[in-house]
Image (tube, rainbow, N blue to C red):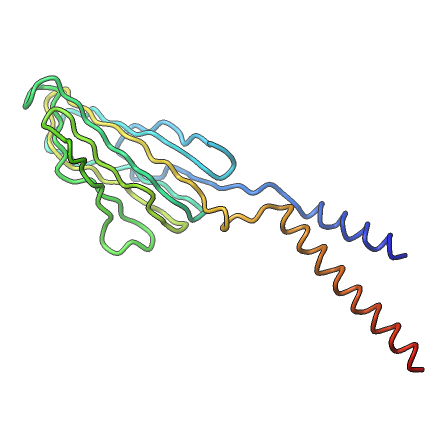
Length: 191
């Protein structure tokens, strides 16, 4: 009987297990070209963004929704052949707004930035599940463009593995069964 109960509890725990997954979706408003999101695995994502619109000054954005908390790393780069030429893009601001962010999170410019080459980054920023928007503002020449990527890494503690849940349930069931069995044996001895 004891073996049958343990086998049934184990089978129940395994049938309750399902793959842990995250969902990251590009949402509106989005005024840039987006490639991805691409899954690194079931819970980590990357996506790229770029724009070569000819209007100047510009303020453009990419928005996304994620149902898991985790670490975001965002990068933004520009490159030009000639300063103030047709390919020159000068970023005046790059920031993230969204769920549980008071104000905005600025992407930081690299210390090595020049007028011909600019890089902005936000590294390993913890954000909760929610909707976020990256806004890029600046000026550009007639054929200037910029681009970057967003990488998301879920917190391992935020996504329990199905096997962990199954083993935990199996353990609690076994403890409860043992306690009940001991109580029954103790009551039988007292009688």
